[in-house]
Amino acid sequence: MKKMHKFLTGSIVLGSMFALTACDGETNKEAKTDADGNIVMTIGQQTQPNSKLPEGDSYADNAYRRLIKEELGVSIESAFEANGDDFTRQVSLAIASGDLPDVMVVSRDEMEELADNDLIAHLTDVYEEYASDNIKSIYESFDNVQIDSAKIDDQLMGLPGTANDFGPNLVWLRQDWLDDLNIKLDEDGNHAITLDELETTAKTFKEKDAGGTGKTQGLAFANWLTSDSHGGSGYTATAIFNSFNSYPKNYLVGEDGQLVYGSNTEETKESLSYVKQLFDEGVLDDQFGTRTYDDINAMMINGELGIIPGPWHLSDWALVQAKTANPDATFTPYAIESSDGQVNGVSKPGVGGYVVVSKDFSNPELVVKIINLLFDEVPNSADMEKDYPEIYAYAQQAVDGSVRPVNIEMFKNLSEISDAVEASQAAEGEINIDDISSFTVKNNAEKIKAYLDDPSNADPTDWAVYASRLLAVDNVMNSVREENIYNEVTPFTTFETIKASERNGAQISKLEEETFIKFVTGEESLDNFSSYVDTWNSQGGQAILEEMQKLADK
Image (cartoon, rainbow, N blue to C red; front, side):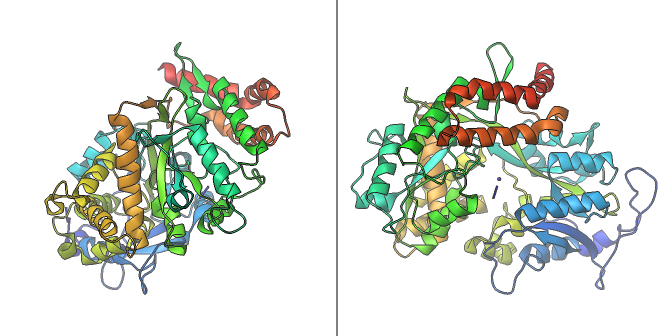
């Protein structure tokens, strides 16, 4: 699935570059340096196709790498650069060969494999000594869940990015189409719509060919249909399932303390029945099951879809493409109400990858200092335009965060909500923009205000920030909480490796995806839902539940 304290100057860093001892105490490693005496650090760089880098800059040579060289005396070189599945393959090849870049971002399972093969450095001591107080406070806001997840045998083996799945899932509707067709939604103003409103709107968009392409669809979903997280919900029916109190791909704790797999509940069966009805009535794309994620993204950009499910930040990386292609396009996000007027969603802390350091790299503390620089010093600068002019320019151009040499995010728990509310209030004149201390929040406020001041001529990226922070987070995600209509479900979460899942997880995931497609398209009757559950259990699902139950019982 397409699933920032200035520290030591270069001269001081170089003074200690030679004698750091390997974590196992076996050897002393000498740092590799370039012609100017900078320590060379190789990176496995994950890229994005739409980075928005200014002309002349690249992943190999950009403002972040220049800043790190200037501030820390570290020259970063790409061992490999890749996007999506290609990046995953490059990481796998590096692990298989044992020839690692000095630093790369990996999954929990990959980190464990690297640790088991004694290929990566222990980071416990360097984290405790070198991580800034602010970086530590970010992890502490999640009760150190992410830091604990990065420990193997009580040793910190990676530095995790933080992620917070704070829901609810949303659907984004083409507001210009709603206006053209005089469709009024959300009459009670709670920023949530009913399934009837969703379905009726989808039918109207298709029947009236709202996009004017002759190809307008009502709804289109990715073939995996649902997501276990808010962040991964783009182009899925997850918000619809949640409205039925169904939470697919999550492990739920029952009243008796026993775990239940959310895809196998009666509520999920009811959700599938509703989605099948949408398919039978022609509201759902008749090519469901064969459309790829890229297909649906192209349909959105080309004006063939007016209802796009996805997270609060969907406008920043997906919808902005449609806005760029068609400046008249605007989207409004809504939550979906359940039959009792509640908005359901999942809340769980997550990890946005682990930064690991090769055991052969001489100065692992430099990785911690880079994280301090990029995620503490820079964003908390009192005057970023003066202190870090190139990074400031990137922020104005909405250069993608993947350009940073460590492609993770570092946010405090629920800070996205408070930050978005503050930026929105400032943009609308309720508070003074100049009084905002955080550069990121202030920058967002300025972009939102730029859009509000002149919507017709605003840059698409200004609209994207307005849509994500003001419309999605402030208007919807914050409001449903303030109005006490948000039902937040907390599934059981573990970052430990589930051996039964390693054996059979891919198999039963494939079974679920393929069977749900058949249920929706009518190739298989939903009367067989219980038989599917039995098959899921027998093919490894029950073993996974039992292993996870032991962890939950702890």
